Image (cartoon, rainbow, N blue to C red):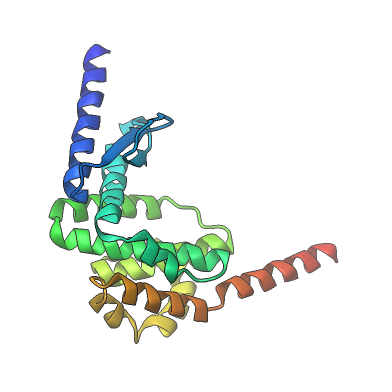
Length: 220
C-alpha cells in the first residue's frame, strides 16, 4: 500500500512539473479530485487518480493536464470573451473551437502532447452514447474540427453516428477550414471568424424550436 501511494505521489509530482514546463509558467498549482488549495497561483484542477475498468486513468489525467497547460500558454481569456457568441450551444461550440486551436499549437510544438491528447480523445468519443440532439451537435462539431486540424479519422461505427450532422457542418465550414487553420497563431482573428461561423448556424434557435415541437407532441 505504501509503495502504491509513493507511485501515485510521484506521478502527481511529475504531472505538476510537466504542467509548468508546457505552460511556460511557474505560477501554477495543480490539484487532484476534490483537493482544495489556497494559493495566489493559477489553479489547474484534474480528476482524482483512480481505477476505471481496472486501469488507472493515467491517460486521462495526462491529456487533461496537457490541454490545460496549453490553454494557459496560448489562450488569452480577455480575447476569448470579447468574441464569445450569444446562446448556450453557440458558447459551447466556441469554447471547443478555441480548445482545438491551442491544442493544435501545442501538438505542433510537443509530439508527446499530441499523442496524449489524441489517444484520450479517441477513447472518449468511441465510448460515448450520443442520445440527445445537443450532445450530437456538440460532439459532431468537435469531431469535425479535430479531423480537419489533426488529420485524424473515425471508426465506421462513429462515422455512421455523426454522418448527418457532419454533412451539414461540411456545407457551412468547407470554404473556411483552411482559413481557420492559417489563423491558429492569431487568436483574435481566429476567435472572430469561428464566432461568426457558429452564430450563422443558428443552432440555439433550431434547438429551441425542436424542443417546442417535442413539448407540443407530448401535450397532444
